[in-house]
Length: 209
Image (cartoon, rainbow, N blue to C red; front, side, top):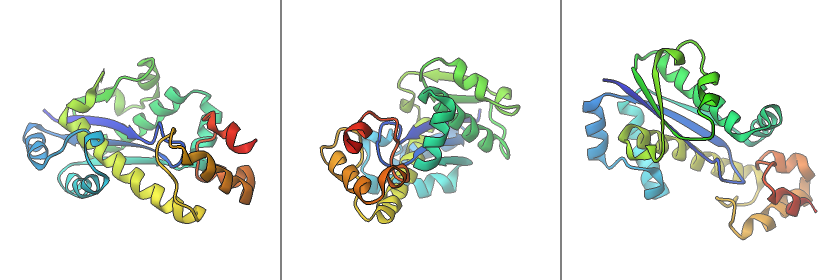
């Protein structure tokens, strides 16, 4: 049976995009992924993630939906809820991977009210059985999706660092986030910050005061 795994990266990072990835694989391919060392991206170095992402893309139908900070801020103002935004992005990634491929089951991490994701699905997405699970990354196909999402996040935050002219720290509790944010804000105000950061985080108030 072919299954789709869904996962995201960047949700908890102040700087950088939100990325959602979908990977489709059958039992044979999942065993090959496992043998390659595919596991939850949180247990891998960025270097290894980037290496594995190339192999996963070669082996599996996949879709990566990247929402850059500026677009993310627009969508957040539209949805007014992070779980609704997440559901929208998951649904798009799932629809994209189902376009050329037939899969019977989609597995995603549990987030908020599961009706958010069900309601965001379009025609193709409604043709698969959807399971939302706690610790879904323990499933190899979901772990593969987590690697693709993280690889894209790592590459995108590097590009945004070049755009901002300063290295953007990962996470939301790194002590350097405020100083880096203030540096960007002082140079270009909120418009410059909006290009690289998720403004609904409370830390924005401290940066812009």
